[in-house]
Image (cartoon, rainbow, N blue to C red; front, side):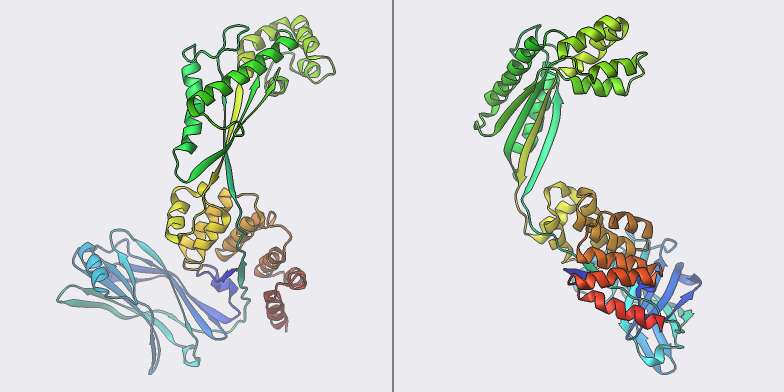
Length: 472
């Protein structure tokens, strides 16, 4: 179980004695802009946040720009983490030599804006202090200082605010069983059940099945555990003959697959449906046929299949001729599903790579194993949760964690949609309490937190105490 506080949303989350916000500032000599500058104080912490825009700064390959934030009040001073924007040669030199290891080191050609944040212990002298910034352009043998002591803002804290802590739930490990499915439209000579691989469209249609199977077989991370094939015939002709055709053609397709792969009998499962009336119904329902509703009435009625086909043909010959030519061929199809299992992954770096390149191979549990190793609240951390809920859109745990990320980012609309599918666990009730508290509905928040507390979520009691303190 993870819990984290995000740089983006901490202004509204901290149980603070106030926040200070400043207008944008520019260091003219270095063409560096500072925007969204704010400082939030909790009882014992100070959060400094700002967007640092380097887009107008021209990086030279052997030089670096050093941004030095500082908080000072008379003789009391605290230097914050520096930001270094290095040219290409200087960047790799710093990496090799371990320089600026305490600073945020950026490649000048690859970064234009930084969402800067720093959390530091709060001390009494900081109320009324100044947040200043200086810049240095450094080469191998020289330095140029500019904007020395440029003031960004004056710190002043008064108002007490709410600070939730977000609880992330690690999903249980589970087997990873996936499926690939498709439909093939194999052409058979009239009344025949033998497959001729070169007949009409068959080279293309058979290749679709082969490609689907090979996609799994050729992947070292997967193994096929099942292949199902279901054949359909179209409604024209007698039902008994169509049953013979659907059954025989399905068996022929199974034999064709086995001739290439020699699967065990337990792998392939077949079924057939003599006439695809459901497919015909779907087409007619979405069509603009003149007699659409009447034809649907026949399809959905209680007549036998042969009587339905004859009634449509006799009553609506024009529409029937169209269906026979344009729709019935697509009702002669074989649907197939390849079920496969993906191996387990435990190497965190491999999981991180797969999150970006092949997330379908990962379980929720594996994604969260990687998330534990990421900077909590950082961009990579947030992206992992976004990908997880995209891959598992109906999973309660994925939606719960995605709701937390959305709230941390200030996107309350997305948070609400995720919370609808977050389930009824104690952690979900806790998250709904957090949602209400951020929106300022303390009564609703307390109700959810109380329910979460009663379900065993200990942190909920802390949130209730915070709300009670705010109401005093």
